[in-house]
Image (cartoon, rainbow, N blue to C red; front, side, top):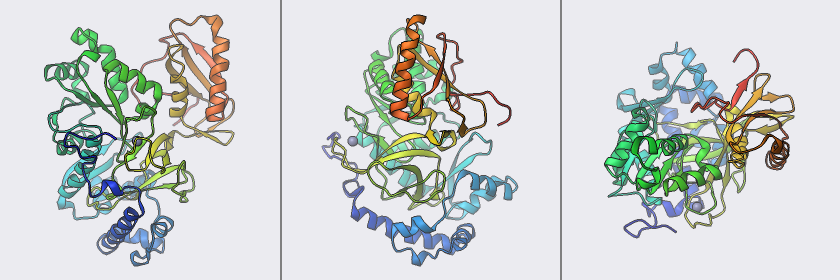
Amino acid sequence: MPTNLSGRTYRNMEMEPLLNTREMRALQLEKLRKLAARLYEGKPFWRDRMKGAGVRPDRIRTLEDYGRSVPVFDKVQRRELAEACGMDMTRVVDATIGVPMENLVLMAATSGTTGEPTPYPMTARDIDWLSENLARMLWRIGVGPGDRIVHAFGLSMWLAGVPYLQFFQRSGACLFPVGAEGGTEKILKFASLFKANVLACTPSLAEHLAAKAPEHLGRAVGELGIKRLFCGGEPGAGIPEVRRNLEAAYGAKLSDSGAGFGISCDHPEYQGMHHVADDTVLFELVDPETYEPVRFEDGARGLPVFTTLEGEGFLWFRETIGDVCQVFTEPCPCGATGFRYRIIGRCDDMLKVKGIIVYPAAIDGVISGFTPRVTGEFRIVLSEPPPRVVPPLCLKIERGEHVAETDLPALEREIQERMKSRLKVTPRIQWLPPGALERSMNKTRFIEKNYNGK
Ligand SMILES: [Zn+2]
């Protein structure tokens, strides 16, 4: 098991040994009952939701009671609330936080694909517990005092932007707030000038920086001295081939984070992300379509539903953020505590081929495994609005630079077989020459719409 400079296994030796244990669940229940009572007393929006579902905080006796009774709060309901508030975000925030508005000191927001932002309001106490969780994550990957982190997530309004910069400081490392907006050249130059040894950004930006380093620095990114990549914001860092390529290019270890408060460990085989925040964030699973609770056991799949147990402004009260996950509750071979979760795909991206659920991220995972025989770029061609796909699932895939046309039929069969065994779907493949598809960082880049409308 990795240990930090101090020789301590975990940053928080009181809480982290208890992650994913019975004692932890007792602590979660105690905090949950307090939170539910606080919201019932003080916040009409949450009281109405509880009342409407027939919930009384004093009748929540187990975590299962809570999961069965308090309704899931999702993006659609958030949008309905925003509409009911005449799109006045201050009213939305006021309704959904757990404290008075004047307690807020920081606000982040994701823009979302539908236009209206999802706000992340924070009080000073929220910043405190969030910082503790980020510091735990960094401790586990050996980042602390003396380390220099180039922060290259998008800074403007994103949660991983200015708020993360603040949270990261709890680790004791020194932060360089270049931001994704700073651009490729500036990120690389600052990393080089100040001898950064940690790079925090999305995996696709890390790939882009690796490709551009020779042009901007006159040397390969592997010569920068980066020891650790802290990646998040996209599922790429959990895909074995993406990890392997990035680790080789930088000569660094890659850590995957996101969709909750988890960080992947350094076990040679990806084990998912260890959730380090049980004492402040309750993580449940529900069915992505019915929202019925899914039993939290090793290998279970579902949509995570979060409750921030000490949340004030940063309040999730059975809220979903849309990533579908698989969880692993058995001990990790790395020896570290915390159940693990792996992102399977975005709930919004879900496709159903003859009733079989497939996520573009999973298709990406299979196709990436065939590089360099394919470039890795592909499109899923949809002839009607998702999620329903009338079979066959049509893919456009770029062949690799050195693949002859005559080799394509055999490669096609191989890809079809792997998809069939991993995803239970056999696609129809249309081959494209390398470079034919537009390169994009957009989250919806895998989809090509062959229909009108949204
Ligand atoms: Zn592990």
